[in-house]
Length: 58
Image (cartoon, rainbow, N blue to C red; front, side, top):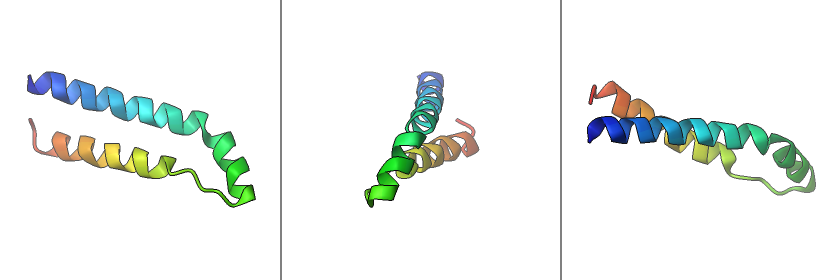
């Protein structure tokens, strides 16, 4: 079960990175208007969860 959780977390991290890269042009355009997309917080949150899980060795 832990392997499944680890694999799911890794896949979620990869999908979040892909979405962040795909949304980059939109984020740059909205930033010019003054609106900020919180994509970086989503990527960092998933990254921290993945790295914490990875460092525990489970």
